[in-house]
Image 1: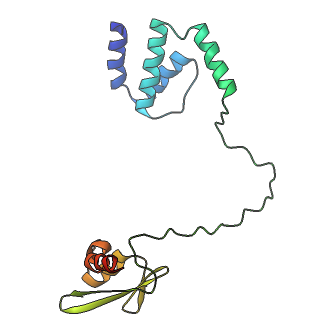
Image 2 (image 1 turned 90 degrees about the vertical axis):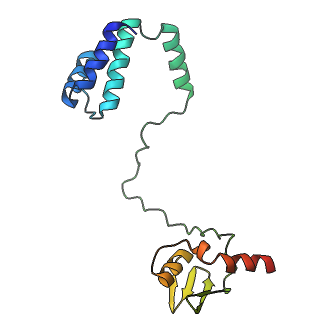
Image 3 (image 1 turned 90 degrees about the horizontal axis):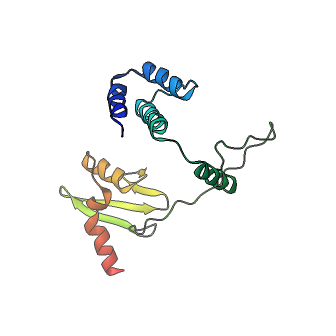
Length: 165
């Protein structure tokens, strides 16, 4: 890079966003509403380098235009043709079954502080102490009073189940 461009880059780093926008407008001949300092500096430096060392060759410009014509480019989503379109009906996506869990109806039991803790695996969640919890971690938090990984808390129960199955 030319010495002047190196000095210009150092100067750009000290400019405010407003001053960078002004410099952008001087170099590109159009204003910008961008306020991202990194983007503005990169674009300005690119333009300075292109002016100092030359821009793309005509052959490169033709090839880029050719590639752009062949590509299915869409910069913005298509506009809806109808204004009173009804929204599509929601699709129910089944939640994936975690392979680490036993089938619904299984009772997970483990001792904790002198008591036997029992948790029933449901189709959607886990039953413990008359409440349904969304995850094993939520059950473990209800039991211990602090957050911990449910699979870690019930590891021996889950591990032994897999060995006997």
